[in-house]
Picture 1 (cartoon, rainbow, N blue to C red):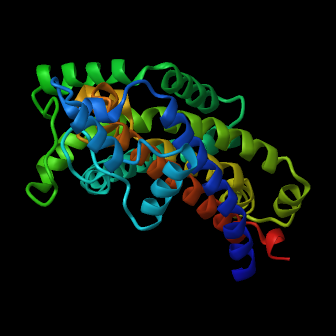
Picture 2: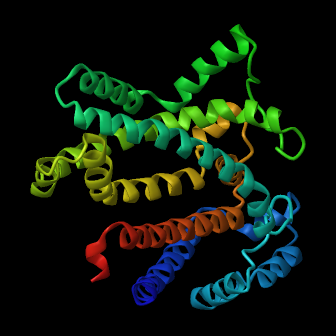
Length: 313
């Protein structure tokens, strides 16, 4: 297992390097001059020259990349041009919020999507199959912002059960935190559950028609054992892949959902940075989320190794 892990880790190194090149290169194509923005309305030439030298904007592109990647390797993602705070500090402040929202959404998606996919595959062409497919189609076609607004109108405006927006730290008020996060988590989990259901159903249908499943049934094993032990375990590979990618998407920031519910996570951070032309924040957040995607893919590979015995040979 260690050799497999080291091989996968080594394969990710050029990927990470290529990602940093893309992020830095695209950053240079964005309009606007950071020095001019920081110089204010007066735009004193001496101040502009000082800022350009401080941020290495007067250096050639390869030298600027070397300064930037050197800082990244030391844990320095730069400084926000708007609020003059380290980007890494902003990420640390927003990460717990987005991590909680993504975690709650994934729990909802897994608890709904995988069982629904199994039931739909086992009961193919039955009423359960049609109902599950209809619910999945509804989840896939419902826009997050529209569903969020409907939930606010129902549970906040009409019933008054949940707060319409805002965020409370769980360390200050746990129940208040859960009340504020349950609706946005459901909105995000709803769409992912639909995707998981369709993939689980497709994978289970393929596995349940395999020879070894028919052999297991012929041996007299119970249907629950056949479905869960022989069927689901061998159908987990595409589900793991999808789960890792969807979780990475959530961690990168659910922009519309966070805007609707005023959740101060990565989505709001990146939107504010774009509107304020805070290039250092954009660059830092994109690098962080890209690294998360790569790490989640590595974790998915390790999960394949544990689930699929054929990889251990």
